[in-house]
Length: 236
Image (cartoon, rainbow, N blue to C red; front, side):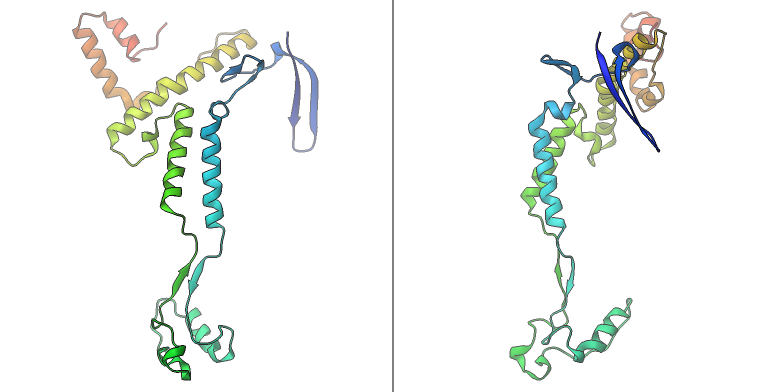
């Protein structure tokens, strides 16, 4: 019989129950380490390399995006010089309107050598992550999704058929099995019959199940058996 130490955080106090028997704790685990069977192992934790790659590439993209951002307008004088104070005010008040300004090609008295190469052409400064880094992050994201059993097609801009198939795989390959783990744990600890259903989530796959049902019945299978296998009725 295991013993749990439970920390309960509340709005005004923090309560600790140091000796709670396992029979009084709902503990549904995703996976277990044979060395420490009392502790669950998350899917990303078990696929540590994929999780680390995703975290590192995301951190690199955050670093790329955390720098200064904006538009730089080259002028042949200091930006805080009093002679351009009115120019700064005019730019702030533009709001899509047209302003008449002096050309910068004369260098404001300094000649062509003091002029910007292009007249009134702002230069953007900001994040510019290299394409290989973006591709690597997308690859790492797909690896993490695969680690938790999710088809990456569910989050890509693909066609509806691929998305529906990815949703079906998620429902029957991930959600339903994990739900059974939770259901069994609840039944064992609460000592009562509990059923968790995802019938509403199957609505998008109704036409596919109907075709499968028709095929099974056409092949000679009993109607009740075919309906149960295709999920059109809940199995007893």
